[in-house]
Image 1 (cartoon, rainbow, N blue to C red):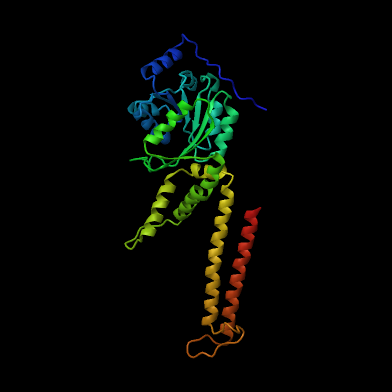
Image 2: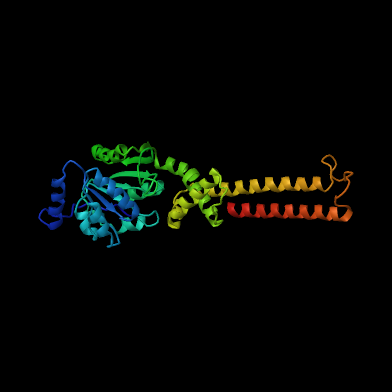
Amino acid sequence: MRKCPVSLDAAFSGDYEAREADRLRQSKPSKPVIGIVGFGNFGQFLAERFVRHGHTVIATSRNPAYKDVADELGVRYIADGDDFCEMHPDIVVLCTSILSTEQVIANLPVQRLKRETLVIDVLSVKEFPKQLLLSKFPAEFDILCTHPMFGPESGKISWRNLAFVYEKVRIKDALRCDSFLSIFEEEGCRMVEMSCEEHDRYAASSQFITHTVGRMLGRLQLESSPINTKGYDSLLDLVNNTCQDSFELYYGLFMYNMNAPDELQRMEQAFHDVKNLLLNQLHHKYRTNLGFSSVNEGSPKVRTGGSIQGKDRKSTIAELERELARLKEEESREIAGSAT
């Protein structure tokens, strides 16, 4: 069994990184230094607020082009992972994609971080990073799993009343943890403390379904019209919001939430149920219009004018019944296939 690395506090007191780390702390001693791993859109989005709240922020990422963005935000960008860790940030926030998180942690020189660093993830799934962080970081490290349930678009203007979900997985330094959480509290977020397991159960039946419906409707290439209802406008907004996110994110919501496959199957079953309601109603309507009574469907009603007579009527009924049987058989096969 692979053991967690042990933090060595690798930077010596006289080397450049140690001097820089000391300088950062002395410049703003009252606020923990926050290090961000992964400086894409979401990392930049959080960094701007961290700086606004008076924190010294450093960042690292694979893309060296982010240095200019970091400079504009007042963030110190450090391209090399070893140098980043030797700056000894008090808090490390992992702003990676769901699919890349494991590899990013594997490449991070954890042993160069100081002992008792607070490590935080911000992924949209929670059981997966919880177990990953517990297995990959030393026991001295604190762990906080979070999910800010908003992003650069929905939180562009304000974070007020937006949900921030978190679990204090392993916290020894409560003051430091509370200092980080206070950023979101002061921004007006709705703070929701719950276990990672409970989060994923809720997220599968809300967030994953929302993304799935949005992507399904996106496939229909819906367009606005002069007679849009408010409901239809809401659907167009849903398509726009979900399809702006990468497919990688959507796949991560499915792959790394153990509850998502069950929700997908429930959605598929619900679609078939609704389709059958329509087809069964259509079948009944056809039989009524073709002259069969609801009491004795084998005996034709007496009708005048325009009704289908004789063999034409019987062949139409037979054709409709064959089609209905075919659809039901196809549905059974699909359900059986998805269950396996």
